[in-house]
Length: 416
Image 1: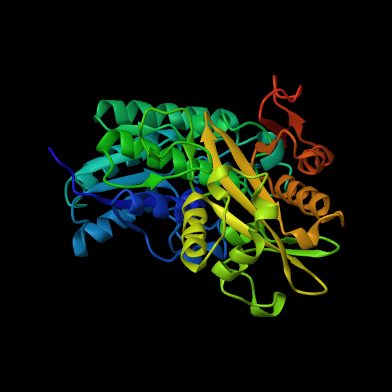
Image 2: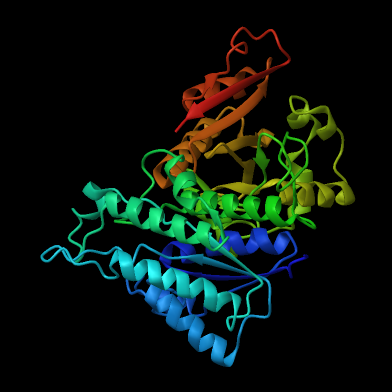
């Protein structure tokens, strides 16, 4: 039976954090997307379960569905439920759980029945509760504790309930663990790049389960891919918001090219900037498809192509406010690893001043500090020694088989 392409999300603060990326991805797949309202209110205190868009514990979720079912039930489609972290909160003095295991089991059983009935959902999907680390969570002076052992117990309960009721689950716990260390930005919430990876995993699960009508994404040097295809990488998925990549160095202001403020540069139309930067002198060491003159039409098309691939940053001279170069970033997810594909170019006016090294080392430091990715990849023409030296100074190392310079292009990687 075909399912209406409507997705409604009922979940705790974890779901609020991955919501922006998931909304973009699911909309691109042709889904109508909605969630419990009140995101701004919820963001004021993410630990307050039930506040605004925060679904809170299973009791709150059940109460919300009862009230909604009585007044404004869902209009078919899929209900995604992501709850559990509030249920297993533990009073450090008494050891009491906010929602004891037996009550949690009963709540989930009633919730599924209600969602399928008066709640109005055609399909219910469960998201398994994300991990906690005892030493991190319980050392940050929270008024309650959480324990990894309880996450395992509550996930086991949910697994049993969902299996008995023929409800499919998304292993948000497993995909998060697979992302590696240094995931948390506080006691229980995640860095932005982790939230993006969680959203990608959910979107890909939906694409594989229900199919996709669009969501064609393109990477800078990868083949075009539709989310859900059997390919090794997922190019072009939204990484951190474009403005998250903003940073400055001693001589440069680096901003996403659609978000730079007027006072930060000598404002011009982007196709004009492209025409001035991509001179034959600059493009001779770039891919052949980038060679040649850039009249207005070609420059406009070039801007549009970069926007489909990822994020493009302008590097602007602090003093003169002139554009000195561009950084082009593509985001890839492979087996839970977030990678950035780096491309950059400098106008001839920036050559010989150390600005390339300043730009790329500054970018690497910013990405590492914000935990946006696990890896970065870059390439340079084998005879483009200045670019190779810039990458090496920033910490990039040659890929295996690329160090001898026998190929036309040298490829580099950097573990963050």
